[in-house]
Image 1: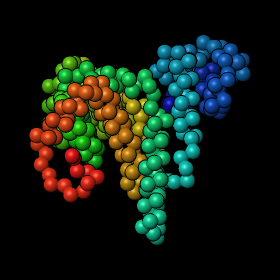
Image 2: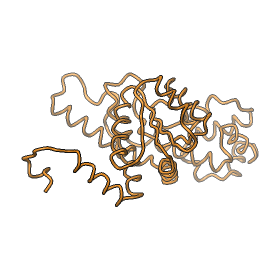
Image 3: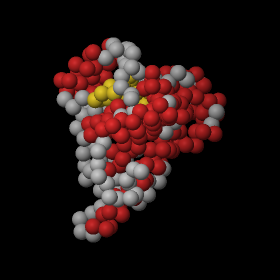
Image 4: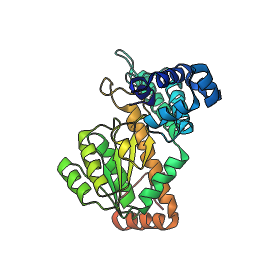
Length: 291
C-alpha cells in the first residue's frame, strides 16, 4: 500500500485528520513548511504531526516527510508517453512495436536508478556479502531471474541457492540460519508462497533483502532493507511485465556487480579459471572468440 493510501484510510482523530488532509492537498509543497507553520494553518499543534508519524510507522515527522516527498515525486514523475501496461496497440507495425518496447525498457531502467538509495543498496550488499549462503526466493516468471542471479554468483565462488517448488522453498527457509542471507523477489509483495517462506525465515532470524514495488506491503514489512523496482504496471491488466522484469533484472545485476567488486581480483580469477576448465567451444566469430 502506498503511503498516501495509508494516510487516506488511516484511523486518525479529527485534529490528526485535518493535518493529514493538509499534507495530501499540499503534496510536494510541504517541503517548505515547518511543523509550526503546518500547525498554524491547520489550527493544531506540532505534536499532532508526531502522533501521525508514529501511527504511520515512522519514528518522527522528519522521517515521514522524507518518505512522503519521495513517493509524491516518484508518482508525479513523467514516464514518457508510453503506457507500461499497453505500450503498443493492435495494428502497430513490427518496427513500431520494437521501438515502443525498447523505449519502455529504457525508461524503466532510468526509473529504477532514480529509486535507488545509497543507504539501502549498501545495506543490501553488506547483508548478502556476510551471508554464508545467499538463498533466493521467487515464484512464477521471477524464478528465471533468480536462477540467472544464482548462476552468476556460483560461477564467481559465492555460495547461493534458489528453489523452483513451493515445498522445497518452505523446507529451505525452515533450515536456513541467521548466518545466511535471504533475498526475496516480488512485484506485489503479497505472494502467499513468499510470505510463508519469509515468515519461516524470520522465525530463524535470517536477514532478509526484498526487491519489490514502491509502497509498503506484507513482504517489505518483514525485510531488513528494500530495493524498489519501477512501479508502473497494474497487477494483471498488462500485455507483459516488460517494465517490472527489466527493473528487477537491473537491480539483481547491480547487486551481483557490487558483490563481485567487493573481492574483484579473486572472483574474476575464479570465474576465468572455471570457464577455461569447463567451457569447450569452437567459435569462428572473431569478436567473441577468446585469444
